[in-house]
Length: 205
Image (tube, rainbow, N blue to C red):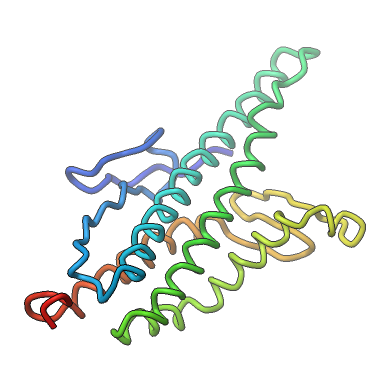
């Protein structure tokens, strides 16, 4: 199995890691919002950290794809060079990178929900409501992995990857869907913030 071909990245985009591993192409998100485009310092700092974790989730997605490709290649080489054992490092790294991708995705949802409570515009709250089920799934899977020490004796499935679907305790999470949703949430939140800026900015209102 090999990952899908990639779509072209946005013109002028800044890229991290390896390109061309799935259909989910991405660019570094740097909106460079000014403080006067948000109502107060708390909202501004929430945005800064939100943007940081969006990028973190996508950097991790890039790593997950790379790990998976390297893991397949290692096992394929081992089969061809039997009895030489495969290098299991990419496989072990894969599950650690999935873990941190979900940590970042969960922080994305937590920060945008907090921003929605503080920002006067209604569109960010509407955005959170539309993604409510996805946000819960990100939080559930992050919690599974963050508290795996409490779950070892309760579940048989403690984390497996089937194609791009991550499973834990019988629950399923499509990582491609997560990788598409995170930047979509970002772009929608950015558009909502830009639309809500009063003439002259919040500092003048």
